[in-house]
Length: 319
Ligand code: NDP
Ligand code: MG
Ligand code: MG
Image 1: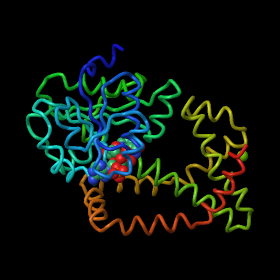
Image 2 (image 1 turned 180 degrees about the vertical axis):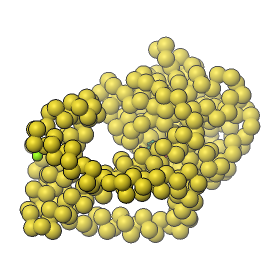
Image 3 (image 1 turned 120 degrees about the horizontal axis):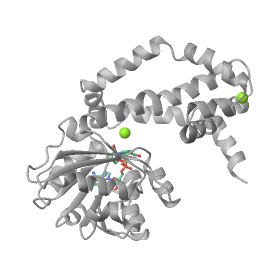
């Protein structure tokens, strides 16, 4: 395959076999590439990777002799993993890859000067990167080069992106741009923004005495159906498909909910990302044993919206 020929004949190592790791490893493996997965001894992921048909070795062994090493362990685990298992085993002139710019941009990892450094960041959750690939399509990827001693790192990055994302498109970026926009998108819009929007809508209806099951369908379940139309055809086509009543309500009410203050809050979020405040706080949280995150996880998993959602999903998906 033309687009990934720069990876042919090379030894590729994917470190980690979680959300992104399994998708990168399996997509490239399916395209006939020589892929080894690097995991720690006793890793929960080991058996899963072996059952999926990829070679597995401990991280240090998998990195030794590899031409391309893609680090797909969690961001917060990468600095220690790089120092203890990767740095000394990377061969000179190897290509070191990331799927998010966090550790390079915030200088938590400073790679050896004799290795090339690149990024391929699929713009989708890892499980979708795999599922969409299996369906014969792909997720677009961002690609960036941070260090290019071999003068062909861009070819490697594009080949990796074209393999993992099945040639649907590669967008050039920088580690700085990817890191700041990725963090902003997931916090303000995709994850933080959307879940709080759905939650607030659900709570408003339930507190006003409406049936929680009806509230769930209106404020959570239908979100996907609307977003799928935006994803496939854009805002105008989505608005064309909904009723005129819904479209009129969209125009007059959207701006009452996402106000000038919301936009100001977004600017504040972006500023905190740009000046490293968010990164610093996240690192402190990981060093603190994820206390805050565990509390939030427990609260959300006990919430009304999850209780109703699990019932509704059984009803929708059991047929
Ligand atoms: P995951 O949390 O899914 O990674 C888990 C995997 O990493 C498991 O195989 C786990 O193995 C392994 N692992 C965990 N800790 C260590 C360690 N200390 N040493 C070795 N292996 C370890 O990660 P994600 O896929 O979410 O993220 C990977 C990278 O991709 C990050 O840089 C992230 O920002 C980026 N990214 C993620 C996206 C996503 O969809 N999640 C989207 C785009 C980019 P074990 O079984 O041993 O625990
Ligand atoms: Mg992210
Ligand atoms: Mg309706």
